[in-house]
Length: 377
Image (cartoon, rainbow, N blue to C red; front, side):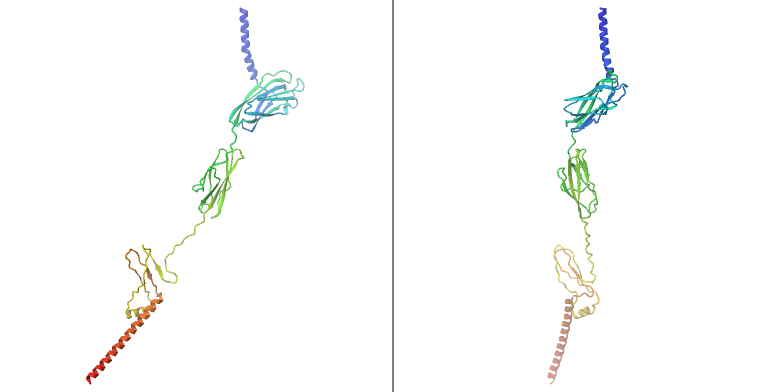
């Protein structure tokens, strides 16, 4: 019984020691290390994983094996590049779906033909367009030193690779404006030509734009042309993929400068001519000129002699509706010709009537005298 118990205890001790030994071997610092060219990529882009030898084990390496396992739905194996460190030995690589294995051996036993530096570079290409995280497992094992002894300490590492969605092909504008100025027609991402009118005072324009994420928007100009001219603002939008391009054009017209409009002051002209002023009324008015002078001869004579004095004639027309009558003002020395003729005719007529009256009175007086003489006889 005692012997059986001893055997059981020995077996248990061995079972407990083995995992610790394996763990210690697994965690032993390796003479190999790995480099990854990138931690994220998109469909169609490539990834490189390099296995290198650090040369710190003292005896060198006469042989080793590299195993790489990957998700074949996310990555595609392209090739293996044998680097400078392994070119003095024998190299072979075998690739199957989801796994790549490479073997290095020195040309002669117990001799290290592995130089320090890069040994193998593995090239992969992303396949999927979905955004996922893929894992690549790398392991270096069966390492034999230059003295022919096995170097304990296989080294493995899991590398996480992020597969990004494909770059966007969206090259549209989603907003386009310039202060309070209006586009014609109103902006829409699928309309690519617009017109805009700005006042003549505006000399430059800055547009606010909004495009797709990671897209780039460029505009060809900032300043406007001369007054009355048209210029084209061209907006070029390049999508995230760097290939898809859209262009929007805004033709901006700068208005003409308005001319100054001078209103008539209503003052008399330089020649001092007749001035006519008329105030609007609710109904059109018309009138006839009437003189203010007396028809008597004496008044007419005095008016003729006072030609150097200013005479004003105000003509009015009475109306039953509310209105303001037109007024005609004659300045000094501005008598119309017809009024001068009428005044002369009136004077001549008056003189003629007076002379006739005198002749008639003389005739009657003479006749009366003759009658008295007849009666006296």
